[in-house]
Length: 163
Image (tube, rainbow, N blue to C red):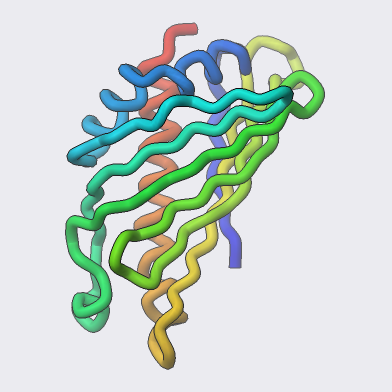
């Protein structure tokens, strides 16, 4: 079951994408949100597509019954793919947890506000855990942590990208 979080920023879509594709901003953002060993890959731009990828270690709230599958500090690989859509971007994101049967993924929308004075950033999330019998239970436990991480990232962007 996909759930989403949204933020309205006081800056343009172009300003948001400038920061979302900036290595220094991305490294600083993830460090501020508790990540370690942030390794950014070069941004890929081809036609109307922009791909932002990184690897990092992130703290994960692991339920006791899932500790044999997931480490409390997990290495993840993230890929955000944006496609131009009108005056904004639509796309997908995916995070693979190294050494664990966990994939977080969802949709991304970055569109101008109706009044043209800012932009709306919406991110949906879903968790897939491929462990027989307890996979759905682990996914249900991890979705809240994932949504909290999305909210923290949206708040960080709002507070740290100048209008």
